[in-house]
Length: 561
Image 1: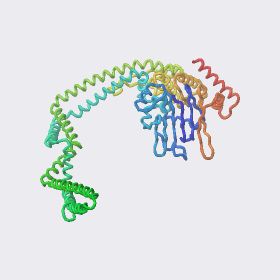
Image 2: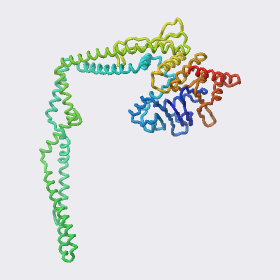
Image 3: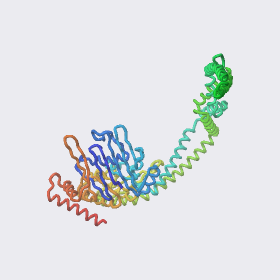
């Protein structure tokens, strides 16, 4: 679950830190106090895009940090897959935002925003106005159904998707290879020309590098020979060459060895240098002899290199790549020469895959229909608990014209919220307030199926009041018995049910505006409920009503437990 949230220099928040608890955490505050910023910061920490203007005015950077503790085996496997340290079930996610970049870390290891997005669904589920609107799209109804019994449905979906990809690949091959006779013959002639051109080149692996080296030597042989001749002149030819001067030096020292035996050592050293110089001049002469290239060798080398360059430009950037192209062309030519057999083989493969795909779609449909009945019954029961009186709820199936990667099913949630009213598609009948409750009903049903330990509800109370609000609060409390729930609300009925109640408030002076959040004591929670009940003037009667509301919520929770 989410243990801690730390936000610094983000929009109206100068710095705040919140320790969340298990069960039901409720956040309240005046409109505009910064509740949306707080929820937005959690979304941002988990990989959502962060606008640069979210950095607080006058600051160079902003920081968002989340601390989770989880016992989830799925999360542990993901952390191992990502090769991120994971000890004692603790996950620390941080994002530091500057004007130039965003630095993302999980357990102090730098990661991409994409990695955060991959991990976030396993840590928490956030429902807000946007997600409620997703109920208006029937394709999301199918996703909800699949999530309800995903242990059985997911493997079937993966099998169907794999078969669909294979089927599509064969279909593409059929379209690409189903040529007219004239076009087929033209392609065959072109392939034969390419194969012959590569074959006639008689390529040898590595010869391009050898020829390039030889070509460079031949091309610059005059410059090399001139430099070598100059060095030879300085070291071995003429009265002033190094060889001649070294010989004179040896003779001069040899004449004085009779006066001092120590000079003999110097003579030996010079003699060694003389020997090395003679070896050098001999090697230099041999090298100069090897530079005598004839014009024919140069022309042949240049022509061979030109051929290799042309082949590389047409077939691949290396000799192995050219050879691989030839192999591919030979295989293609063989297919074209056996065109009828090849087309029959592809059609048979397509038909076999189509039959297998159709069976997989039927099996997937059967699993979905089997799951649809208990899911619809559970959602209906949850809707009744949320003050939808006389509600009817069913899941309707229709068949697509052909199989898709996710099967052949079109699914639509059908609902009737009033007696005598026919079942109609949810997207045609539900109001904003009803959508919020329907989403809550779905989340409560899926809570036991999902492995996510934290559920966040933003503005779950949109468009509801009175008895309905009380029912919503009770449903949230029921979900919170098994999951951590964090909810933002404007309704006292929901706030009264909180196991931990937090207040978000905004303060301003002439220079700045600051939002802060803190956990309320029991007495402070009663005062906040009174504010939500009575508005600007909080009388003793309003306080008594708030206290009674708090006590009533406590009795409900006690009775439920």
